[in-house]
Length: 156
Image: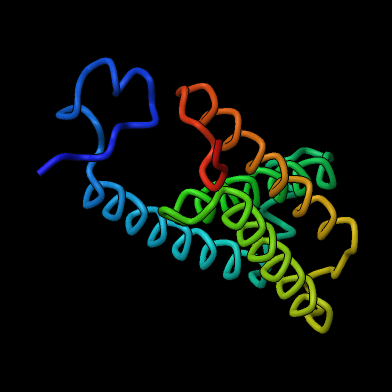
């Protein structure tokens, strides 16, 4: 039985034994999927907890900046995990899915915060969530290209 040639030039130079198997890729995607679900749950729960006093105590007067940075990095990680969990799907499809998941979760959290007296529903937070998700996808894209792999989903 022969294996398909590796797309990664480094793996190709090391030989077929060094190329990742389909089973290993599926296991990695499953781990990332579980991590994405867990991280999404952390975002959802922390989005409805009364955290204003804790943020104020830690941020020492820079509450807005602290929450924006928190939103940005939380959604960057979420998008990176969702995109990485896409397995063998084309990268554009994975990126779109990750962006949609981040937008849906960010919008849902902001909507749930609206009636809560101890939380604020802010469009700016949603926009920071989207910016973070885009940054996470950019990092995933750059890291994949840095490893020498050809973009998935493209032929020729």
